[in-house]
Length: 421
Image (cartoon, rainbow, N blue to C red; front, side, top):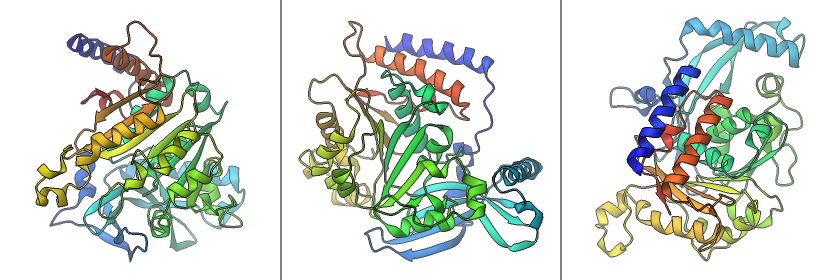
């Protein structure tokens, strides 16, 4: 059965590539050598400070980006000029916005863990060349597990009778919660690509928030107070030019995830969880079966189609802790809990034997696993089995690729190591 399924989606892919020519993916793993760092080129540190929330030393390192090439800069400058005319007529009279260049910006914890990677565009005004503005490029996703979370998550909720096409077009709202912020590439992609998306982000560390805004080009005007008010009284003109139409739908909160979820009254269509600390540990309170967090999360998830996506480290899936060598435990502290995390999320969110669905997929090129738990997937079909689920997801993934004009293949992030939990 699995062999026939592979042949089937291979055939579909060949048709798809004829119909649509995919734009270049500037976040392709091919370019990872530019930002991963090496002994000869470890980048330039643009921010460095010590966290008060358990993340150790937080730094942002800049690396040169070869894409887009200089020949394409003029097109982006024309876009900026058009935005000036639309959003703030007359702003360009004091000097047009010019592109200074593009860089990779890597958020690191303790100089070792690469927590997030984003591509930023640096611009300046002709009459103020000494002032540089950064704009994160939302369609450029450099880290494979982010693409995996998005591909698996959006494909799944689209398979649960949620009208994602209307959400993409802005005809209906799609409420999304992101637990863990990092550099902000995941929520920024969702808000920029899904016109009906209203994205709430919860990040406990103010230093991480500051780093994403100051050094990684995340829109400052998205920062909100606990009451939901804008943290700044009025967005800067440059923020309006770059982000108007997107930043209004992003709410970034400095808060503890458990407290936020417990006190919230919102119902979310999708929830993304990526919340590792400076020691690369997924806090136990965010996955223990008896945790207040998981019980509250279940109450915040839409009962008919709610979908949760969790990023996990899959380095060493060992359940018997006594068999883990101490040296390995220090290097791979999270992998041994993966099966327990999957079981806890499935049981609390869809119940044992419930109508929901849970599965994991292996992320290409890195040691991560994406866990997806959803409510509303049709399990009543007499043909329900692993192949039925995979074929349903493949069909939806091809539709989404086309409608969203994605620069990467969702299928690439669904076909590796697919396991029903």
